[in-house]
Amino acid sequence: MARAAGKATVRPGDNVWVNVDVLMTHDVCGPGTIGVFKREFGKTAKVWDREKIVIIPDHYIFTGDSLSNRNVDILREFVGEQHIKYFYDVIDDPAGKWVFDTHKGNYGRQFGNNFAGVCHAALAARGHTRPGEILLGTDSHTCMAGAFGEFATGIGNTDAGFVFGTGKLLLKVPETMRFWFDGQLQRGVMGKDIILHIIGEIGFDGATYRAMQFDGPGAKALGMDDRMTIANMAIEAGGKNGIFEPDEKTFAYVNERIEANGTKANYDPLFCDADQKFVYENKFDLSKLEPTVACHPNPGNRKLAKELGNISLDRAYIGSCTGGKLSDFLAFAEIVTGRKVKIDTFGVPATPEIMLELQQRKVWQALADAGVQLTENAGCAACLGGPVDTFGRMNKPQKCISTTNRNFPGRMGHLESQVFLASPATVAASALTGKITDPREFLK
Ligand code: SF4
Image 1: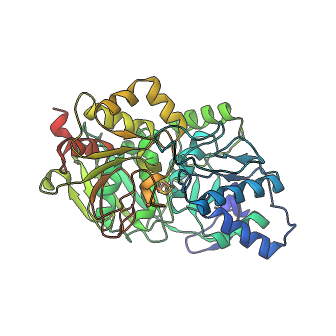
Image 2 (image 1 turned 45 degrees about the vertical axis):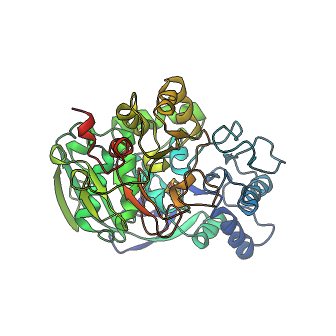
């Protein structure tokens, strides 16, 4: 933040104007952001930098709801007017209109060649997450990009409209909490279990306006997908951002995606200061963690999966930026393949590339054979409910175990439905039994 503010140092509590490297918006907040920008800067105003804005329709896309479809058209018109470089449209025609074909249904692909899927997964996959940068997005889970050693946080439409016009934002420097990881995860335990354990420890407001720094040899041992899952859910403890120090794994991941997509090649990583001060410190032995569940109605309502065998479920769901990545589907498939799910089970990949990879590896077919209902239309789907025809949405009071990140009342549809957050492995085991189940029962 000091570097982005042009200062030698900053301290927690300082309010600084930072220069923004990337501003991301999507179909839900983009139209509102555009409205604020035009109202405040004028109808003919130009954005501060057409190469630093990334627009990703992903939320209410695959629905017959005409107002939701119209939101994507508003984004396209703005992109055309402003010549914005990075727009991952759902259709190929820059002059076209987006209409979801409800007759074709939700299972088969309905997107064009440039569509990128869920914004946070797409930002990483398309080379927009880079160490040492400031990434802001009109979405609370923008903190996921902290997995790459950058300051990434969610902002509202008003702030984003201001960034459109100026490229700057006034931010308060957060205090930092350090979560030190030792040891290695046992089989059947994933990054999701780590972050659910931590949120249970500090509460769903335990990190309000603080940076959550994930550190130590256990953090270095985690792959990028697990780091993304953990940073993604910093906001579920109220955190301003989550962050991992970048290392060789980070650079390999980022460089590969920058090269493949031709996005900005130069970035300047930053590392932790030796004399860093923390407002909170705690150590976690990852080898002692067990499959963990956040019960209805908030992400801090922590229990162990093995204690919840009395909870019968109506459905299971794997998907979202948090839990719809390739490694998530592979962990899920390891348990489900060759068996049959007992309850309605829905699968939504986070990006089209993940869907294609699963199909090429024949994992897609194995999941379908197990009875999992899969959509090729990568997106947010039922993670936040959406219009009533959204794939996997709960339209009646039901209990669902899900790899998503948030379970406040009504989050996945019906206000009286209940969502239990868990890892892909725990969701897989629970889909097979119809009750919340410790995945280690299937991995012996
Ligand atoms: S998948 Fe869910 S949490 Fe992620 S961006 Fe979409 S709605 Fe938000």
